[in-house]
Length: 315
Length: 297
Image (cartoon, rainbow over all chains, first blue to last red; front, side, top):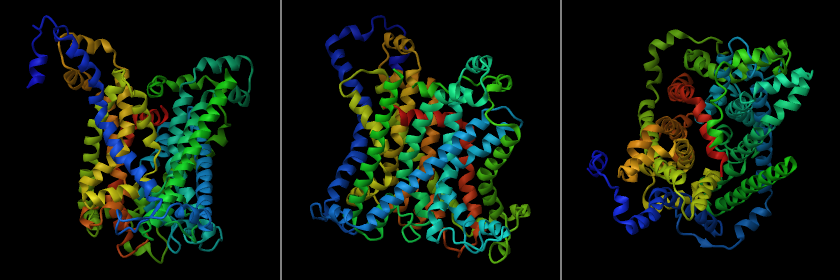
């Protein structure tokens, strides 16, 4: 109702602003909080409080069946974690998974972007095909790849069978589990790298290429002098995002291997979930989660330090 | 905000331009085609295999080699094929969850994006930091305390609780997208309305919102598919099979072969297709929105 009355009459000669300056002033001061307030309060309730509670939980022994009935154990969860080989194995799996996924996704993604930045017939279709995996829901991705990797009837074994290799348990043998999980992850996330780098490549002014061509520069020199400096910041940002997302990636790993075979893909987030919902130890799960969070924060801090150094170098 | 606007600019006729630019060729021609073919095979094959498996005969799946070509005639009995999986019930749940997530998230995002774009106020930096930092928090870390919180509030095992939790994860990105969109609208338009005595709420809902509709649509699509794809929270919070979204329902078939795999894949295809179609429609905005959202502090 008020909406309609306030908008229709153009007859309001003097804006109400002048009528009550002090009231208006006060309103001006609180109104931003009315707009930002709901989002902030919401995030405090559903993000900040849970994080704080999670950290509190990590100092307790809390069974899953009674999530609010824990007993304080001090640093016990942490000291047990830091002295257990299983935790270091989990940390190692996280680092290996993250490093492999990020390196392959960024290399293949940036390479594809360079390829797709050139004109050729069917470019639109090729681009669409390469992009599609990113839109495939994670659960569908896991379903497809678990079938491709299937030991007895999967198509991958059919293909390697032609090459004279016997049936392999891609998801159940410790030597293959991590590779299978990384391959699936790269398939899924590489398109994002490609799209972002491609957008950056397309914003390079063509005059720059003209100029280097006039100078008689070859392809490699042009890449070094023009292309790379232009896309490097984008590649760095996308590498950071890929790293953070890989550290926290859960679904693909959990659905394909469940952390196995023999814990080879038991990354920190998978470990958190198993501790909480299989071993029903919420306290220990929260402690692993907190250490995982420290790892993500470290990556972010290192990234910003590197960015600052780069900025200083350029200045 | 610059990241958001940058990509669309170099759109017009890149082909002609690039053909004339030899310096932009980083690979020789045959090598380029080999690499492109490898890429297309790598990215396209698993999707093709999903289709091929969905349209396969029961007899080819186990024991003998699966054929390389889909049996298109199976499209005729697609209904029977997916009959053994309660996929329509699960898809309906997914629509409810994703729709609820989108609506709630957008309301918060439009309000907060407006505040961040148009006001100067104490604590603005802190609010921005909160919106930035919460994107870094891993779902798997939060799932335990949120589970504990919801258990005490009686919010487990319902779609309402799941929507509430989802919004916490999808809203920050939406706020950045909306803020970027409002930043790009000249302030003069609102000024004119303000002089006419329009309250801010009216300006926001009747003047600004229609102007940033494309960005709202992009944010809506991102939210919808976050809700559509979400698995971890749903799997943890909802035990009842009838209330599962399709993500959890389909995941329950992984590694078990009681239900024929072609039925499962057909259901997965129904779950995947809407995501693919929508993504192709709004791809450009999704990518710039995502990077804009996650990169700015």
